[in-house]
Amino acid sequence: MSELLFETDWVGSRPVYYNVHTGSASHNINDVIAFADVELDAAGANAYLAAGYSVFQRTPIRDVRFMPPSARLWRDDGGKLRIEEVPIDLDTHLAERHTEDEAMDLLRARVQAAESAAEGDIVIPTSGGYDSRLLNLMIADPSRVRSFSFGATPRQWDSGEVARARALSEMLGTRWERIHLGPFHSHLDEWDRAFGPAVHAHGMYQMEFYRQVRARSAGGELLLSGLCGEWFQGDDDNADPTPASPADAELLIYNAGMHADPSASVLPHRGALLEEYFEAHRDTLRSRHRRVIEAVRFRMMLTHYLLRVPALYGFRTTAPFLDIDVATAMLTLPDGRRRERLWVTEYLSGRGALFESVTGESLYWLYWPVMRQQPLAPLDSGLLAEIVRPDYVRWINRTVRWPGLWWEGYERISGRHGFRRAAVYLRTKGFRQRRIEAYHAYMTLLPLQRLLQKREMAQRGRPLHTDSVAVP
Image (cartoon, rainbow, N blue to C red; front, side, top):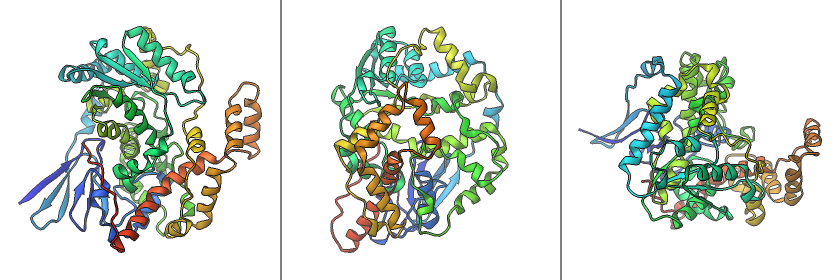
């Protein structure tokens, strides 16, 4: 007899981790790590450094893997695990052709089905972007909507995204509030308990956001997420061109610069998993549609926190754009209409919801204030020497802390009219701030440092105090 433990959906939006040695499995990687026996997986750790998150069904830990999309995990009576592929006829979905109106109708049907099944308010995190605007527009009863936004600009209240979200709410008559993000490094321990060494520590701002949203909500509300809408609608340049080499295929692994420098690794097997992936998927990647799907599947490990974090705060979360019918209907629209999401722009304009003329600050400023308000403790270059060169860790420690205020001032004015050309010129001469690059590297290495610290504590018989966060 075999026991079915888990099944993943077609894009792997809820990662499942398992330990091939112990037979344990969980949505939380911390639950399957035998900390006292941790050994690094050189190939998995190097892939993690390069991507900023676990890829190719490998993690930085030997024996700890994660399930592929569209698969089942079985455990037999002897405790041995087995992965079974769940057949999904993507070719049939991709062969179907829908009109733009039909694609929007499918999205509306999914949104309103979730709306009808839910009780009470419906929460929509509204960034002012196309995806959250579409979700707001698809709701049958706007009076049930509570939308929340935050600004990621130097003055959060002047954010262009906040201004567009406010304009949308005023047009639809929904209840809207702006959340002011406080210092979110306070959530680093909570992030570690929820995500461990599977992914870069990058979503603490979402924990701060939903902590405040939760305080303003009654509890148990349905939350609609616009996750991955832009990729299926046409903002998918990462899928071009057809990969001719492993280096080309690496462009499918979206990370927005949130990773560490893999050349700083002291581990062997650099690039081995990428090469294996390219050879195994060479034929599949000739299809642009399949490349977009592969890119989304990679991206799920990085971005599934947009579903997990609100669930941790008690929201029932759904992502209509991840519905296979909605996604493929949008994905297979004519390329000329999908390019730069022209078809979505025209739809929003026709609904009076384009709002591109609404003014507001656009300079992205999410990480700068928190680095000043909550300075980061230095990484342990000696402990991390098992993974990366100590001089790289010392550079990260030095750069995230100094000269912070000088670079913050430079970054603030570099996007201003009158200085923008000078900033572009200085970048061509090699003058650029690397503090955000160092910050991302720090947050990539921090989960690995905590993993090694927990291994030391477990081997010494000391309590870990690392109770994992249960995943709804």
